Every structure is written in C-alpha cells, then in structure tokens.
Image (tube, rainbow, N blue to C red; front, side, top):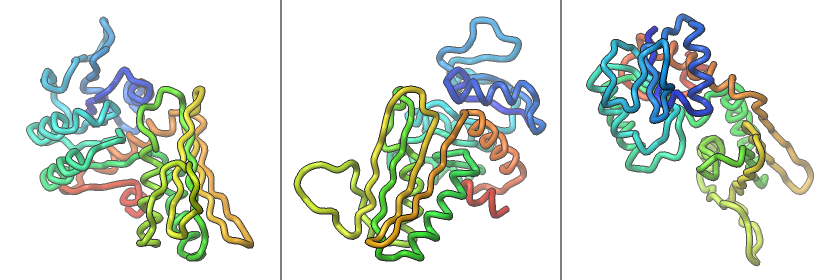
Length: 248
C-alpha cells in the first residue's frame, strides 16, 4: 500500500516514516510532506500537499488541524483514503471531515492506541455501573504540546457522556464553589517529555476505581496509524475510528 505521510518531519511523522520505510505491514512510502522536509532524501519530498504529484492510496496525517480543508480537498481529488491523527479540530473543520467522509473512507482518532480504545470502553462500563459516582480525567503530556486538554481526554469524556447524558465538562478547577454532581472534571499537565498518560478516576463516598493508560513510546501511535490505514483499504466511503477497527 502506497502511503503519503503528511507532517513527516514532526515527532510522530518521524515515527511513521520509520515504519513505512521498513515496509511495515506491506506499507510503501509514496511521498513525505512537511514544511521542513530533508534537503536530500531517497524518496519524493514536498513542502505541501498542493505540490504532490505521485501515485498513492492513502494519506496518514500527523501535521496540524489547520490544514484540514486542504487535506480533504486533496484526498477527494485523488480518491485517497485518509488516516487523521491530529487533534484540536474546530467545529467547522470537523464538519469538513464529515462531509468528505461521504465521498472517501476517513479514519479519525484523537489517539491511535489500542490501549486507549480499551480504556474508553472500560470507563464507559464503570460509569454506567456506578451512576452516582464523581468522574475526573487527568491527562499528562510533554511541554511542547499545543492543545489542552488533549484530544484523547476529550475522546474519553465524550465517550463517557454517551452513558451519562447530562454530564457537563469542568476544565480545571478554581474559585470558591463546590463540585456539581453532573461534572466531569478534565485536567491537563504539561511537563518534560511525557509521551502521554491518561487517567480516569471514578469515585463514590465508599470506593474509587482508577483506570490509567500510559504510553511508553510514540512508536505505538505509529503502529496504530498504519494498522488504521490497512483497515481502511477496501472500505466504502464513511467515517471510521478505533472502535470500528476493534469491532471489525
């Protein structure tokens, strides 16, 4: 499968490049796209999608959500399926993705980890079983991460809200007021070189359950992105996610 890696010179793009260049799971590099592509490379390089003129089947995007329109327009024009691994999309950008998914297969996830997908399902089961429990989500990432809270924290919170529909998000906590019963507290930590830690705490007056996922290496996200690309191959137009892949 011929893959275009968009955002190829970022932290995650570099990890994906290593796997694709090694032919992981039948992958083959069609092109690397980044504003800071290497000066000399043994493969096609471009500074933007607008320049790309190679044959490919898929785009794995680890760039930035701000290029969503360009990414969708390019993929539709070339008939490519897309793995979107960026976070922080606006409502307008998400609408563009939804519209594009009517024409091409799109896999989008705030986190490409199978472990996070399992954490989400465990959190939903726990909250559903303990309807009166308080819920707090704590996420930790490196000091270079731009968006807060993380897309994964929001992914977890949104999943929990499917089983607690009246839940409201409380981002951080300050001031003089007690905790409301329907709150989901979401807290962000930024320091050092933390790859990613997500913790869901579900507690009542008598007991607490803590669910935690820790990423030890960015490699797991690269593996997940390529697995997602393989999953999309042959799929009809539509929007897919980690749960889709797990249930397939």
